[in-house]
Image 1 (tube, rainbow over the protein chains, first blue to last red):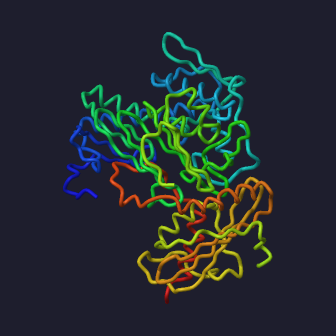
Image 2 (image 1 turned 180 degrees about the vertical axis):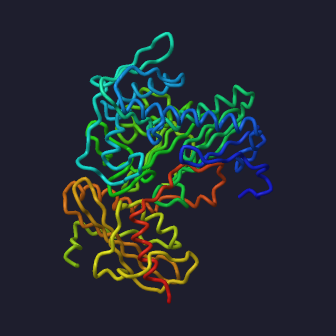
Image 3 (image 1 turned 30 degrees about the vertical axis):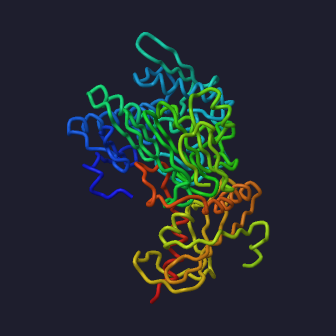
Length: 308
Length: 154
């Protein structure tokens, strides 16, 4: 183990959208065990404002968000400028998973108890998500992306939203001249620049253990596990939109590596729903998945170690 | 009570040695409960539900029940923990599903205990960050808190 004096100044850390964040600024000499140094105060403030803006647009847990307004009435909604990459990815994953991954699972999650009040008690039978084609349509206008809805609809961008926000934060810092960064939003990590980092793949059943280590350079790694947001036996946040029920097919944790955290996060979620080969055929990504029987698998190109 | 322990629903965890807090984190991943209840006759029915972290626990085997509302109605599990020298030496989770769908879900989570054996200590690895998850569910924590309170040396 490296000694603690090697790790240099502490990275910036804060809590946002309900999880701890850490952001480090580094160069190629930064030790492996170090996140890098802190942001300056102006950059830190800009990052916090960017996250707040994303939350105000996309969170279904706050009543003043755009998502909450879309859930109250039907209409034509001009989406924020960051919407296109996120919803384009959702369209691709929706098609690749035969509609099992969908941004329309908000009402399914609420039915299961994962609502803005954290009621955490199911309110009846599972509720399938509304069908995309029947409910919403996206129009690209000169003034941006417009969402047309035929009825109030509760969107949930949990499958890829946090990863996307990791990208957006890094983009913002790069635009301010801070190009060599590590952004870690509790399970969703992106490192930019020439530095290589090592990411422990945490065993969801024992947080003191890693099931593997991934080597990451100028790429993103996102993790997803059924115990992350679980509130009962078989009740967790990875929903099959077709049935409205939490997935229950034996995968308990996934990790995906891609050039962006948006793609890595979306693929990590989709790994619960479809054959990994199906995703590899359509996305430039590597993956690891852990089954409930302890089986650990990785894609042929995975760069790292597995401790199975 | 033994009638609940049918062979098909009974599951024995891999033997582990871990501090009680770590075991709580493990157990909470198996199956959580939105509302926890201690059933009449369970050993800790009247015990306080809070316990100091750095306490001495009595050696022995303790159990508690957790109940929760699933989409199929009320379901419950029983958690049995063996303690020796303040270390959890054995964990057993007995699922008591009343509905086949719940049995399927509970089986999936119970089977997950087998994966406890996978992995290496993160503290011993030279890594930059850890990617995983951490949230624990309240009901299971409550059930385990009852167990801890019951095991506290008086």
